[in-house]
Image 1: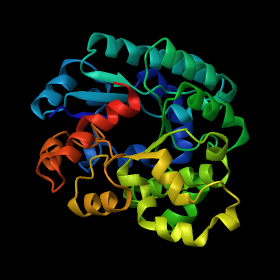
Image 2: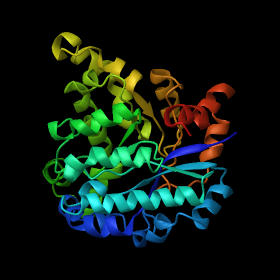
Image 3: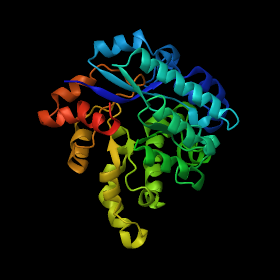
Amino acid sequence: MKLITIEEHTLDTAVARASAGRAAEVSPHFATAYSPAGGLPYSPTAEVLEDLDQGRIADMDAHGIDVQVLSNLTTQFLPADVAPELVRGANDRLAAACGRHPDRFAAFASLPTSAADQAPAELKRAVEELGHVGTLIHGRTDDEFLSAERFDPILRTAAELRVPIYLHPAPPTRGTSAVNYEAGLDPVVATRFATAGWGWHNESGIHFLHLVLSGALDRYPDLQFVLGHWGEMIPWFLDRLDEALPQRATGLDRTIGDYVRQNVWYTPSGMFTTPHLRFCTDVLGTDRMIYSVDYPFVGNAGARAFLENCELSADAKLDIAHRNAERLLGI
């Protein structure tokens, strides 16, 4: 069974260096909370993150991963004056890695969202010239969701190119973290609570819901999104959302549930637990589920076995393993 995983990360050194200042403003204790020296989960070394050649491929081979769809980290924290150049270089380097290993890698483009007027052209270049299969965006830019007016050309361009937007978690705004997650807690605990433990998954779900409620998917009804971590909390409240926000309140063309079922693809992002699988496939089915590990924040070990040994039908497993990714991304 061919296995494609689509939320697999790398770190571009130039991007990381230039985005460090803004990242530290938003989440001051992030580097400590996720230091490899701390021994806590989701804390890979920079060397593993940066590897786009034999070390990464050897790990894929050892655990039965055939193709990774790569994505860069932290680009939404880049200052506007340097973002276009640095994102262009990062996209070029991902394209070079895909060129060296065309049977093993594909890539999502990064976008210079802090220089929003230049992002559509970069998305078009990355897709049409470099062969990237969509874009991955890390949370808000300058505390704004993609539903903000200045980002609408990004949505329009993705819709025109017929490529998806992967809405990836990022730390909440400084104010949100201070009020909701810190409140006297130990800084490492508060940071992990605000990020991988809870907060940034909640933020990602809210991000997509803002796009829906703003009418973005009425303007671009065929635009597709990907949500990791079993749909970033949305499936658990989908019926409640439809009940609390019916069309007579929202004025939208469809129900929230319709947007989720028709415009969202979801992935596990390394959360390989049977109750999550059962619930999400009950609510959303398997025809829009794609596999992901969240490598190297989660290791590849056990990823293939979870899918192979789960209770789904053989046909559903093939959809999740590779056919849905091939259908969405054209790989």
